[in-house]
Image (tube, rainbow, N blue to C red; front, side, top):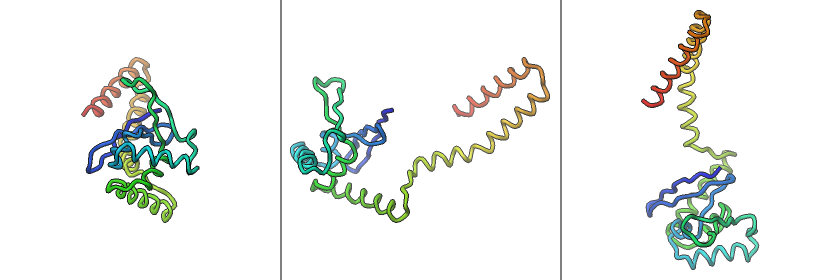
Length: 168
């Protein structure tokens, strides 16, 4: 599954492609991320592979993009991090500070938290007791009704109620 996320910096936004449990950026996107010209990014990407730091075959995807005559190379997170540690710019420095913070958190705590996912899960958990009460109420009504037509009518009514809650 491919997701597109937006990476926001004080210098602008970069659309980030997330696929196969990693992030993928083109050289143009790395230019935006690190605030350097294409030639600088190209040099650093080439050196990452020439120096044997990473294997090109397993870290690059060639993708056909609408409006482009030829495939565009996308580089995974390993390449992005390697380039981020080589590039000299204010944005590159910010990227390194961010990466060091994540590494420090992971090494000292033994894990890294996805705060957005935790907040979303917390909201779902907060809603669970009322959902369970609703299900319990339905089960009680169904047991009292016994008639299949009445059960369907109550169930359809409950679905409409849930839909109104989602829309609200």
